[in-house]
Image 1 (tube, helix red, strand yellow):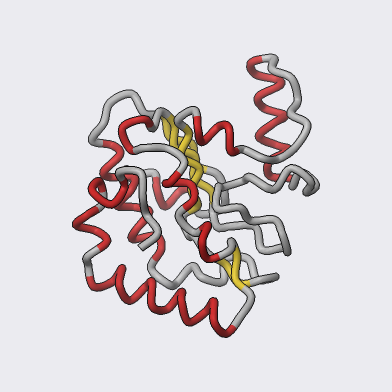
Image 2 (spheres, rainbow, N blue to C red):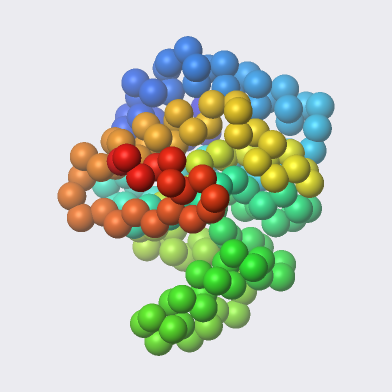
Amino acid sequence: MLLENGWKNFLNDEIHKEYFIKLLKKVSLEYKSKTVFPNFENIFRAFNLVKPSEVKVVIIGQDPYHGINQATGLAFSVCPKCNIPPSLKNIYKELVDDIGCKYPKNGDLTQWAKEGVLLINAVLTVEQGKANSHKDFGWQKFTDAVIKNSLMKKNIWFLYYGVDRHKKKNF
């Protein structure tokens, strides 16, 4: 299991459920037979950069970027050398317009994660060139559990982006 930083305990019940074990097996097979993003060791990177007790904001996207060298394991984040994708440009534009911050120079959101922003997608893996290709694997059940468990804490902001965001409104 690649969950660290207190998340194993926080999600202990969830990661031992049958659906999650099957999900990880299916994902492992995909990595062996296809090109899948993010890199296997980065699937849970968003969780490993911030402890559950330190989460202040949860930003949820649809699924990882599906282009080569784009997905980093953090929703909307790309490597510093990558072009900033349109979805992240829109987020940056809102930040500049709403609060007057400077437009960031790159698309690496690692610092956000280290400051308490949990950057996850509803689906944590994707096949190269096939947006939302792993949407039926069971990731949403897992990320829903993350959201529900996080709601137990007070003062957490949730931001949902993507076409499926309306599915999370019941939380």
